[in-house]
Length: 429
Image (cartoon, rainbow, N blue to C red):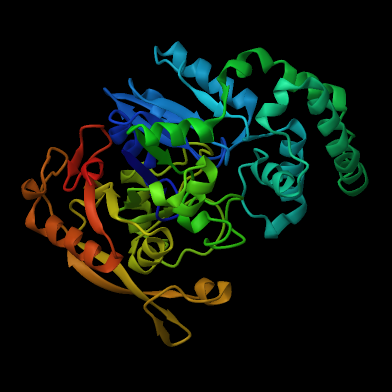
């Protein structure tokens, strides 16, 4: 039995999809425990690039059953568009299952998301506008729509009418928008009912039964640690818990069954959207990382903000998630740049911080304290063992491991599935 959690350790886009794809072929289930179609993964298989949003990356595995867990919010239109797109390319999604306890994104959630962002103006969070936040807000407010409601048309209609009784007042009186017809929303959901019903399962029961029977389960977190609504750079965060504890809640698998927590980090740092970013670069090196690393959001199409590796952030993520292992991605991007700065601490108004500052204000004013290491000039994209790497690349990785609080078990040296160095296999822990 193995229950492995994959967690983004920065602000997302670290390469979780690649890690899931590599391990997914050796497990029985791949679960997405949080987020919605606001979280994108890029996976390259056989030279083919797949951009996945709502679907778990494990959907490309030939063996694993992919499951959208109870902690997710599901946009049905996006779900079936993504399935149809995969199948048009010859990939199969017939094994996909959805927890009956997952919540559904309604058209009014997307409307509220967009008008709220516009209303906030300069104080906007930088959401994707896909209704994720309002859906989670309804979940916590106990007025949400769950996947299982598709199975009872009367309940579904009642819940839609109840939700819109309040939301139409907000749309009309506060935002000067037209009221939304509950019947239109009901018909929207029912148009997908026939396709959705066969996918609905008691995921929590099935996953725990599988583990009890010696099966292997991989939990693929969306977004990342610094976007966690509790532990991230609030309020510039997502609306769920994309940390290891959130994976337990979002899958129904208890923490005592977890065997490994794998943190995914780029060899540098990126961020999409608004919010503080201490190591962000505004010079030629920021442009170099963006261009060479292909740093464009899968879901948003926005260029990612780029900066050097932040070990303060890495230590924080390792502590919050309890990382047993790290997967360092995109090491090849740093080839040939001369010297590589590593942020080892922050200066906040003249005070050195070796750990994450307590307050949002302090983090916003944090100035990185760097040490530098020499880069390597050799092409590493063909390396398949740690020993094959240039000595300077090994030194850089060893320093990251020393600073980050967890061992480095996987190293990405290119975008392909096979361009990964395995130092320690979490499947054998």
